[in-house]
Image (cartoon, rainbow, N blue to C red; front, top):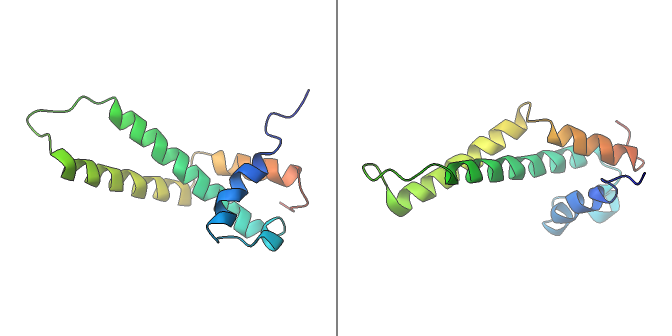
Length: 108
């Protein structure tokens, strides 16, 4: 059975390399850098989850804050997502890292 996560390493590492967080030469050999990229990816995922959950809540006409409220909640969701991923997280970063370690020369 083919591994459904094969190639995920490239998917997770490419945005970090493009933004300059990791150098291409050392990306596959730097376990700490890869762990950080996995945590950043988890943070993006948690932020997306929070954004989608917030979209399910109907707007309150009494307290509808308009664009300022939207900006504030977007920033709040981003900071909460960063905090969640920097702490224990939801386990996504650990799973990504272990999968990438299995498929490359990274030592756990």
